[in-house]
Image 1 (tube, rainbow, N blue to C red):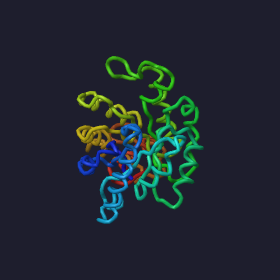
Image 2 (image 1 turned 45 degrees about the vertical axis):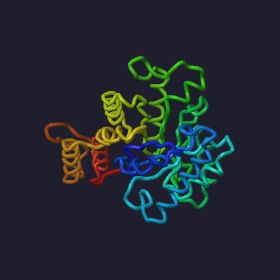
Image 3 (image 1 turned 120 degrees about the vertical axis):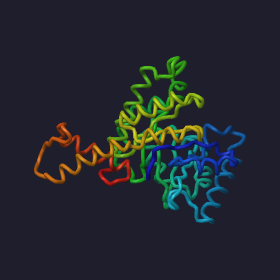
Image 4 (image 1 turned 60 degrees about the vertical axis):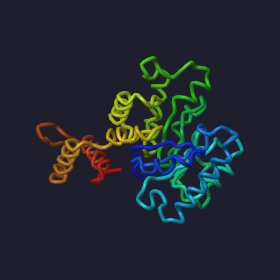
Length: 290
């Protein structure tokens, strides 16, 4: 499942669902949590359930039909809404789990999903306790498809005024949390997904954030508006030059499998370079390591 761009859509705005599905996003997240006020939760569940049922009837069922994957962000497991939320999300490609707190949260949702085929994408840094459980996600369930993090709920939970400097950059505590989430995802062997860029009009800032995330080792990013999708996709799609360089490294080692290090295009390449080259090719859809 390719997850460069993941676009949130409020679950109580079915008028926006089709636009989201044609936005170019790799995944669409129908949101039953923060984007929906309590009085609208039932309406949102009905809208999401109707949309997923219509997709199933038409045969246009998300990733299985070659379209964007359809995720549903449910409410936190401790709010006693999970049964109603999962009933509405029946048939979704994936579940986004907010306020996740490590292996126990992941295992609990895995049990609740039962025979459903949905994968799970936890938002893994929204409570103080969650930060200390980031290393526990690996090996719990094959449903885990990635880890993402958030810079909004955590400051609210600890009474911080904000997670961002006036220029939009992260303050020190949240840069640390971002890095921990990145390494936690890789330790678990799943996709690392960057959090949202909250300023919808700041396209230059979005582009810089997405490019830095791709540079740092994230493989995708959340979006909150369709206009953000193209820039995010571009940032997480290797350039033609990067693909050519990666292919040259892979080809060189294939031609000399006994070599521990080689000179490729005038530069030294060894095992870490080969591993990274395979990742680049995989992101470009040209094989290589996942």
